Image 1 (tube, helix red, strand yellow):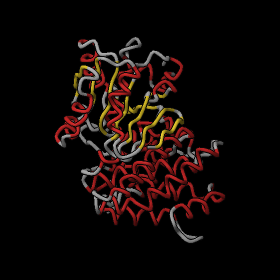
Image 2 (image 1 turned 45 degrees about the horizontal axis):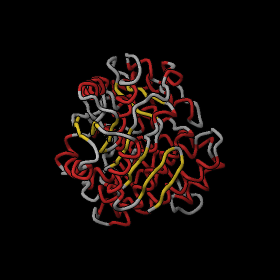
Image 3 (image 1 turned 60 degrees about the vertical axis):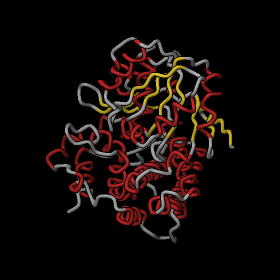
Length: 378
């Protein structure tokens, strides 16, 4: 069992879930709101978590987390938290459940509305240490939200915005790869490519943070070395362990900043009536963004190709596009139902996204549209 203290405390290994009762006691959580989604519940993981809690705490459940968490869902969960006099949360699931729980942690301890806590609205300084305690239990290996300081929420005005604060790190993360053994192949691939995108984007970000870059490269090596194995055989325990570690490292590293991939995937994930998976979007957008950034990241290309397991002079963008194909992911935005007439709006929103400013090359509106077009496919 590895105990890692980096930004937050992580208990990482098969069997980490068994530590949940002790962590609840340590944090003084006696009435826990378990935040999850109906897919996790249907897979039997919610029941497993509740059984593990046992007599350690009273449990209330919110299982209506949408694929892209919304302000309305945050407020609905917050209403349950208040009505049941909860004093902490356990988030069980992927990034959506963990991000929703972080939003709840803010709004039950701070004045409404939620929008004022978005980073682009000056919200970083408004979030205080009062945030409700949260134990994060990931059931996918992708977002790394269990060690992330942000939560991405679709606000009532239609914008998908990030709450960002050092007080949004989960109080503790229990990373148990066993919880990912039943993850379907396509979701394994999509969440895994989310981790890949995190590692690549943070590594090429121009901000100075060598430790984060080293972590990103290690996470990228693990992900590239095991994502196909995990997708092909979901019961491969070593591959599942490595992918969960890669996802965690990607999020540890992306405190350094992300880039154009996320600047576009955030607004695409908020398109009404089109529930697009965040990791799949990142996978589809990544080759075009790598090509856009190529003129300014030459000094990092060798380290990047090494981490991808490629010989010198190889094209990382072509490798990622081929990897997407081998994993069975969509061939482009068109296959995901995105219409070209959305490109102008997505470009405008991308330029306002917090990830736009940490891309190694500043993209114009026309360049964003060009990257979307390059990601469109047949």
